[in-house]
Image: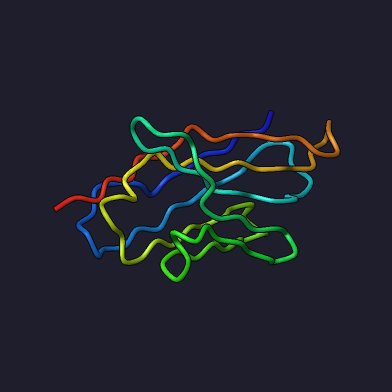
Length: 120
């Protein structure tokens, strides 16, 4: 079985920082890509940032310069460092992973999400 577990969410004041983690565990051979999404109340889920096992990264325009995504291949973990947070970044943040597992060459998994609230 494969699991994705996000952590690191919480309540932070505007201008503050948080670091989210997405840890993949189970019968994993390698990570192809991991992507962060977020979903604010009453809105559709939107793409935030992504990274590949080769180290390439991409960001939504709304978070460029504020968020940094990185991968620790040894730990099968991806981090999302979020700085200069704004209230409009309040959302549940989800990670999505494309993995090579013992059973599948490529399979897609979602985590359960972690709440980020930016408020004074």
